[in-house]
Length: 65
Image (cartoon, rainbow, N blue to C red):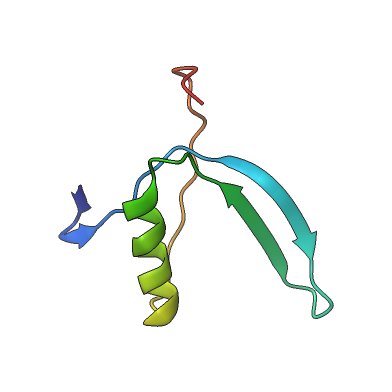
């Protein structure tokens, strides 16, 4: 899936933890399902290539989490 000719990494997730860092930053950890391997790989590639992301979160109202 793409938005405005940019790839979108889409997956269901739950929030595992939210932590405040010493420098005042915030770290959010997500749990992805076992079948989200390609999405996790895409996120790892973003980290490796230092690609900044814009994140939009929506509640999954389908009940499929």
